[in-house]
Length: 390
Image 1 (cartoon, one colour):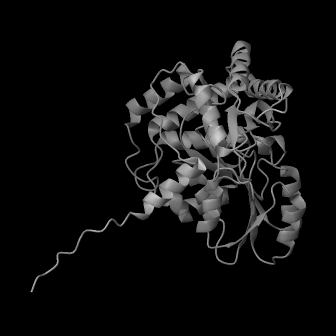
Image 2 (cartoon, rainbow, N blue to C red; image 1 turned 90 degrees about the vertical axis):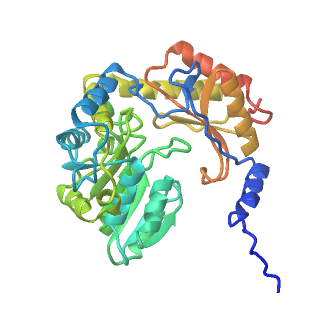
Image 3 (cartoon, rainbow, N blue to C red; image 1 turned 90 degrees about the horizontal axis):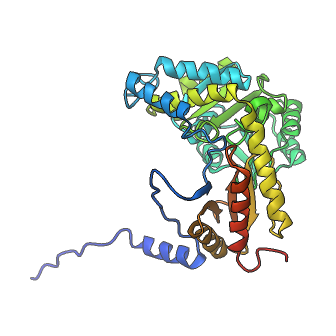
């Protein structure tokens, strides 16, 4: 009797169909390794204050690596907390106006930590429809009852909170990454106070850009340090480094140290990143005008683009979003900009909650007037059919 040898099966054959669907929809994403030095004018990164290559920031990273080593060597609760980490936490909290801070390995991890540690089964978590993916994932992991409310709709938030009698929190971006619009924080805070809910705000795009000297959107709204308010943020945008942080009342931070899985079971932030972030923070204290400058650049980009017929969202911080006719057109537009010497972001589904593809230009405090004119000219010359109203 002949025995048949089982033929190996491609258990990942289903990926082929998924790839074809992405190609047909114009949604393929690829990695493009960049060289250490690029001739492209950069309006794609989140280096809002131009600090990632600032000599002081780089020196802070180098000195920290030389003193503390290349890695944190363990989780923060084992060997991963250095004196440098606690120094950064103290200065972050003081700068942004909060009682205490906790540094994590990324802004993504900071949102996971805050949302999951401050909720449990039976908690109501209300999430703005425009929130970042890290907040969405935090809500999914929280095991709480999650309600998504329409984008920037305080009345809907109030009604949703009013219908729940137990513990509740509202979580929102301060500045939304797709269109660069600011959340109605004052109205959101009022709804939370009225219904006895906590307010958790991701200030990733506000730190270094909004508020007095770049102290953030919560500081600008008069909510920094409020007893029912918690902030999360990233160190990878305005501070030009890497990592994230949660800021709030000291008892909230102690609670996260004891309960947040994204903190407890993750290796601590590398000392070089902590050193770079601390150096950038101190530089921003010395040069607070950088925050105002990045807002000026964003406003000028918007005015020039819309005056030429493009449809763009008015920026509340550093992000300038320009609508494209389709996902494939946005992809081609970004590629044409790159070939012309300009690097811009390209947002397509599923990164855009409304399904409308965009180019995303990020203002930088160190852009010159000539560079702004050059960038706008390049976007206009490469614009696809249907992108302008002229």
